Length: 280
Image (cartoon, helix red, strand yellow):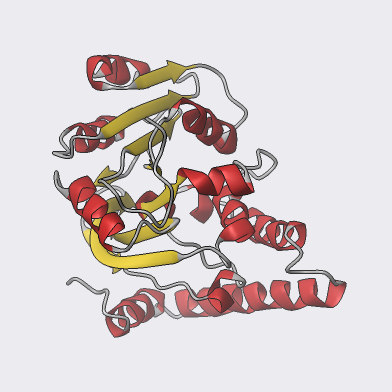
């Protein structure tokens, strides 16, 4: 059956969930189980492993009869693995679920599908994430994010572990650019996220562990955000690039200053509480 077109909610959509992983044995079992326990009928799950050597493949194999597709082979990075997953998928909508994250409960996909239909099958629909401490599993805050155009152009990203993308977006704007090692999802979203219909629903979709790749190399993140803006012609002058770098430099200085006087954690809690996201 051909995928349904966006804007025409004739029936509940087929949803593809894609997990890409390399040496993620610590959490990948929880990720896989959170998808397999979903009570939504028209769901396919695809796992793309990048040639793990730490036992991840054994975990995948233990669930292989319940997977629509899985593969373990060397790849050229996260973007390449995402693109493989897309090529294997058949759903109307696609969700990329990281290998250290998990769907929040067994009814999440069903609730998302209802929201897709209820909102007229938008091209992009996303929900909320609970951010968990990587080691303890404690909920730090809820990421309930509205991303207006201005914030997107400042590097703010819709959280892709809760973002459901209609297949037509890939057909119109292409897949992920492998030259981006960290901000590949941001660059991809810039292509159509400012023109296509984007719907945010206040629904907890995913539990996300902190400490992901984008937090480990902030300089490269900034470089790739600027490269993405330049590639998509939102930055076209040296002055515009310098202003953007100045914006990120000022944020970095502010964080370092607050860290230095022991107030950054308190500031983060206040900011989350003010935005209605502090769950403590």
